[in-house]
Length: 127
Image 1: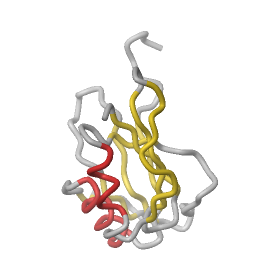
Image 2: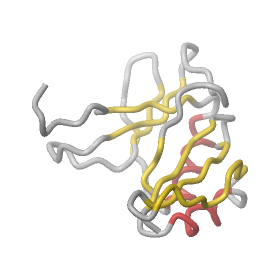
Image 3: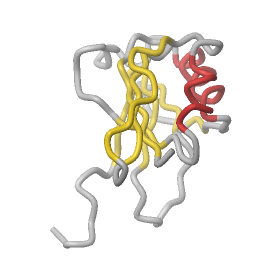
Image 4: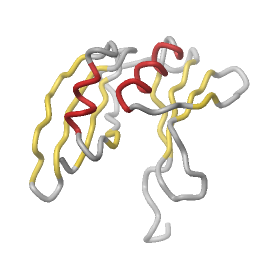
């Protein structure tokens, strides 16, 4: 593996109602997500810059995807202000599990929330 490459390249967050999940994530991040046509799978992607080398991901609805509060934790970028994202979670239908918490001065802050589908997801930001 190239020393400059990232270990993580793609993530998928399970959804039982892709429309509801899309509305939730668009509301908390103030973004517009895009449908990605896939055979036998409903997928909506977070904003992407193809060829940028950044990590990208999507919401996915299919029988093999099951939302969970007990699986892998994905940390989503909440820069520049984690609290601004946290303030939109409950009005959008989620629940804050761990409020803004400092990891360290060098690393910044994190928080945990339950999304509209029942997934435990984390946030990270410098502030």
